[in-house]
Image 1: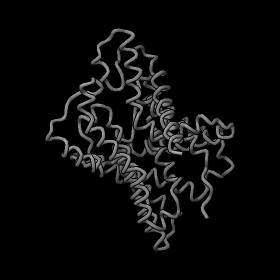
Image 2 (image 1 turned 135 degrees about the vertical axis):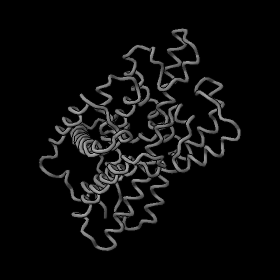
Image 3 (image 1 turned 30 degrees about the horizontal axis):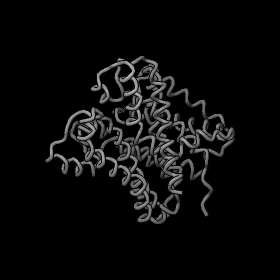
Image 4 (image 1 turned 30 degrees about the vertical axis):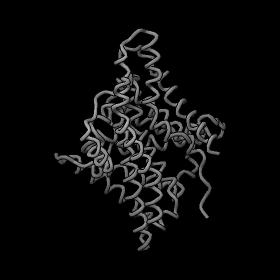
Length: 342
């Protein structure tokens, strides 16, 4: 029988999705630097922690499970965007128009995580992460099943595999050529985060006495954020190793903080964590509600509605309101759907 789910991970996901929504606004650069050092790697880290042993022992079921959880929502969302794009463009929600002969190629390319340029331009470039999450989970299941099938020492080999993945990312990032989304360095690096999360859960490293003090590891991304901006998509060369260490430090710190907060039973944060997929897909759309309000009340041009994430001409502090509405509205939508469904 598998161990009961760690509910503090919902708190951790709540923290991370709030940081993601913040990171997609025009907030102060140093805060953005800090967020981007670990927020998306930590999602992969947590996904590894949540990986069921049954899915490793039964890889066919594991593949089906992860495709249903990650790939299906991605492909349905991107197809919906492509099909309704021109209509929303007429309504000034998006920029640009698809030609009739571009629909099928755009959908087919999207099936392999090659997101259409118009989708990227209108805020759907964020869907790169669904590709990384899908690939990382499938590759991790394959690796873990392989080790288990041949009774190899996982405790010793998994850290070496994580190091090997970082080394591969290092060399591959230095190769100057067009890389398909499925084989970009961030996808390889993503697998290292996923496996690290699984390893820490598997060998109960968070159960050590010092785990409640691990939040101090935030100091590493904080220090680095004063000097540089780095993300999973921009880390290159030797900086991949720096990024990996900072991302793991930030991930461990986030989970440590989440465990502390879970004892306070902040249900609102837990609900946010359970609504991450809705917030992830919908927050850019929700931003437009607030942008429209600013346009109407300030007699601004309706064409500004299509700007992603929102017009820079707005006051600098509005990122706070965009963060609040970008998190709250999708969460309420999920809550409403759940009530109707159940």
